[in-house]
Amino acid sequence: MSVESWNEARLIPTSGISGAEEQERRATSALLAVMGAVPDFSRGLLKSVGAPAGTVSTYIEAPFQMGDKKWYPDGLIRVTRGKTSWTALVEVKTGRNQLGADQLDRYLDICRSYGFDTLITISNEIPVAWGEHPTKIDRRKLRKVDIHHWSWTYLLSTAVVQKEHRGVSDPEQAWILGELIRYLEHPRSGALEFDDMGGDWVGIRQAVKAGTLRPADKGGPEIVAKFDALLRYVSLRLGRQLGADVIHVRSRREQPNPAVRAQDLLDRLVDEGKLRGAVRIPDTVSPLSITADLRSGVVECSVDLPAPQEGRSKTRVNWLIRQLKDAPDDLRVEAFFVSSRGPGTAELLASARESPELLAGDSKREIKSFRITHSVSLGTKRGRGQGAFIDSVVDGVDLFYGAVVQHLKPWSAKPPRLRDPEVDRVAPPELSSSALSSQDDDDDPGVGQD
Image (cartoon, rainbow, N blue to C red; front, top):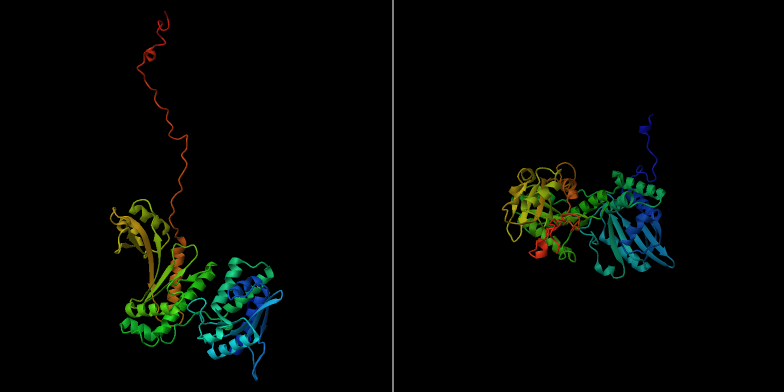
């Protein structure tokens, strides 16, 4: 028997998972055990839900008596520091299982009765924005107890970023965290990635294409919520690859009231057949905008870039083209001009490379900014795989970031230089004078004699 056919021993094995209950129990135990063993990993997670710094202790299926019944939440996390402690109950779902409002209400009651601080829920549901919960909760139950949600995608992304980019101080702890990552990435763990646009996706897409979608149609609100969840997933996934905190962008108007963004998305979907959003990646020139046009069947990714503030328009175009030397020819580049509200010039990158003056336009007009856009075909399937909507968005973002965004740098003026005192120093010509003494000739033997 060859070594290749042997199963390597793992700290957290994926074999022997017999069903959903066993899957949830093993995922809960693996996650909480690693949180207790790797402080570098647990510190960031728990700080985000209000826990203080301290010693982390974790438990699974702790029993709690409520009335004449005993309840067993999936887990419990306790952080102690001196004489103070912070405690959270944990409820976990894996696979396609969703959190139930009745069960969460019961666990919130337990938290309140026992004086615990918060309830943490974990599932494959991705909320539309950080800090929001995917399950509708009776707000009256949150007067003395908080509730927070972690998606498995968020937990996996956090683990990868910590291990691969931020680092773990202890080598053995780094290995333990790596075992959790390996486990969560395995299909049998139940920690799925975002993989479904919902049961109404096909009907909504067809209505948009036919121009018959109405604001009150069933399924519209779910689709726009799914799209925002997809943007959150794209942010987490890209952040995992880059080792950076990639953020789903929402306007100031949308941040305090998620219903405002949901309504704006739905209105745009009905009127234009488009779903739009953006993600912000640290140290890039601008947010990366994503537009899914369901009528034309394309996904567009774009960024805006301020033009240099000096030089002719053609010089500014050449400055941009030099940064796009390895970008695909089918990029669309737009130039916008100072004191012009209308559309500017637009060319494919291939044409702009051959004739920069086409994009520069009238030499008397000054370019103020550029917009760079790349389009890919829009998938139509609701799930994952070839021809799927989710994959077309994810692949479009990956391609655009790798080929374009990561290579763009903003323009900056050169600092003024000190003048070299040895350069351009010319001795002034001798001054002539009409005074008589200046007319004396030293060679004249009569000069100075009586």
